[in-house]
Image (tube, rainbow, N blue to C red):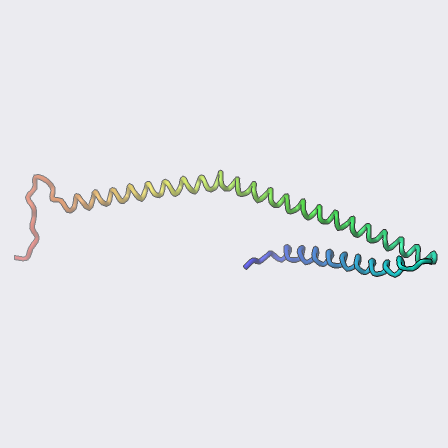
Length: 137
């Protein structure tokens, strides 16, 4: 399960809230424009209202375009930082860990060989000395 830190959740919720309210405003303004554009004759106040609403819609679209570019830029920078971090990890940390694992394997093999040699020496009697038998006579 993905759990985001509190400040990330707040940022996402803020973005969604702003984005949905901007969309809601565009829809509301478009609904206000439609009846005015349907009229053949407009009063001066209606013409001014129509112009203002169209200008606000243009500004909202411009803001949306800018927001998309900013968000795209942030995601792109995040992607670049992720690639950089992965490359740096692979060339520094992973190489060190691989070397450490190789050295541990060599150490274990050496210890196994040493133990096998000691076991073999214990099983074979020393040459030149008679075998000792342990028994209860």
